[in-house]
Image 1: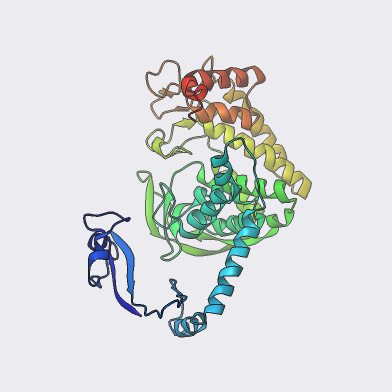
Image 2: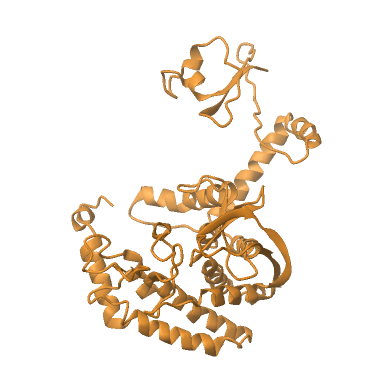
Length: 404
């Protein structure tokens, strides 16, 4: 039986450490809950053993929506065989899922990470708990969890599909989306981020290209609705209600693209209160700043989505997007070109970021990388851009010493 417990990490560890905690020397633990502070779970259990006797102990930790079900669950798993069988099933599930991708490299530690551990962390920590690095608040990020499932699709393509459908329900009627939200409270934040909504389209392209399943375009989901941001508002946290308006995933994608077709005087997409770099929150929040990376990202999406629409027989926007795509490519290779690499952004006040003239933010990796990924960069410029990236951003001494 449990004779004492504590949820207080300080009380249990004390001046020691996890190898030799103070709680081991105590007669009994403090029996206190430290929810919301520096917490832990430590349980003292008294066991009587006869000579040569062994005993199995089942510890259950979990949650249940209906309080009345807890008694039945506890009763079931008091039977050690039921607990062992459930553990066997759980191990079998994860082994089957995680072994779908196997990688062999010259580095054993890399193999250990790639063959199970990283995909497990992605699914459990990022998708289930939403408590990974830099995002530990339990919220769904519109771009964050879609990006997570792009990698998880190799283990389960349905995971990507379900995430697309879920996120489409957090798109506003006007086409923009919640930057993040909590399912538990149904509250989230409406922003002027310029890339969030496009990750929906990007993920749909990835899913269809990976699976060949075009039926996702016809899945119907609702929008959400709420007050549009005022001119002086970059973001607003609120309870946004489900809209009566429902449309197909195809229409959700069209809405996202159409909302994104806002270009500045350089012919590049307006950056709003940030693109993939959240730190660019004041680069274009006055309405004039432009993003070079977003231009490559949008080009890539238009190029792929046009092909998907053509194969699906949804051709009403193809000609329009072809024209926009070509204009965008021209702007990227003229106004966004700095001579040896691509610029990163133009601010509201027409300053350039990612230029040889800058003492800081001279060159940004993603603008150069996406000139290749998107296939929007001119051939000669792509090679020069990657060469410049390596010259400025790769530490050759570290690389040659194989520290990375």
